[in-house]
Amino acid sequence: MPRNNPKINSMKMNVWIDMDNSPHVPLLLPFIKYLESREYTIFITARDYAQTLELLNREGILFKKIGIHTARSKVFKIMELLYRATRLVLFAKKKKISFALNHGSRAQAVACKILGIPCYIGMDYEHTESIIFAACAAKIWIPELLFPKALPVIGINKDQVITYKGIKEQFYLKDFVPDLLFKEKLGIPADKVFIVLRPPAEMANYHDSRSEELLEVMIQKLIATKDVYTICTPRTNYNKCKLKKYESTYFKVLEKAVDGKNLVYYADTMISGGGTMNREAAFFGAHVYSIFSGRKPMLDLELQRLGLLSFISSAEECNAIQFIKKMPVRTAFFHTEENQLEQIVNAIIQDVKIRPESKTTG
Image 1 (tube, rainbow, N blue to C red):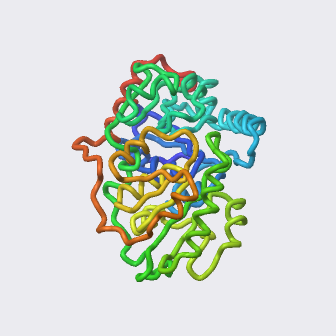
Image 2: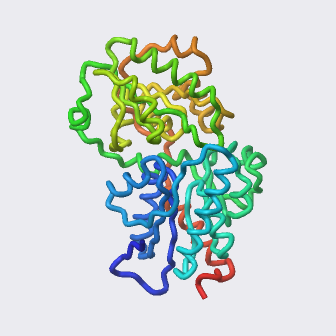
């Protein structure tokens, strides 16, 4: 669905943004607001996966739901990808899209390649299967921390890259204002160490089953530890059903999405099998433990070097953790003077202007 600024200028561009996972909502919302402030027309599509649609609805964002994610085998994932890409082509083919923007959406990348739309793809995990991104992206926007050492892993050269300082989570956390009543609203006891637990992404291309083994050990430790209160944020209904059996007075499994920024802001300890929530929690000074057992992201290895995150790789390391209250919330650990988001958008617009007119704009 288009998000039309009342002052739309016919000379401005039409921008298509696709979100296929819940972390993309807070990440891409600042891009949407910035583009709208410059009087661009925005079309938004979203996949029904994790809490993506729920978060969009909470933000009051108009969007077109296209596709779901149910497959766990590689063959069915490919089938789902092709099916969603086909539906995205049908959605976008007559909308005169000037360029597309996403963070890791393979389906939109394929659809844009078919339609001849320049597609600008964000990435911050270099070990994902990136052949589609490398083949379909007009440019890929990545943190400077990945440049240039991650480029051969991703399969791109420096001319295909737009870089930015810091981490992508800063785009939406740097101006965050916490809800002072958040813990009270969720019934989180003030005298307990507050733990946020995020399961591994079992359906992701990069998933490794050892993460689930570490999750089980961590849960057993949490439910046996006094003076802690845990909120578990399942990714899918499958996650939720598996985790419900552990519920107790001090171990809660969320039934619906809550404000994730407040959740990580107040967390004393963050434990996750993914990356985004760990980096968000590190931004706010939590004790962060990653049970991700796949190939380690360069970004997270840098956070570990800075003492902001610890990788957990064994049951012994899980059981050695001491859960304590965190220090007062810190400011951003990557300080940047420039507005990195604006620089990314400006670089994209300049690149679009020097490209031949897309097939959808004629």
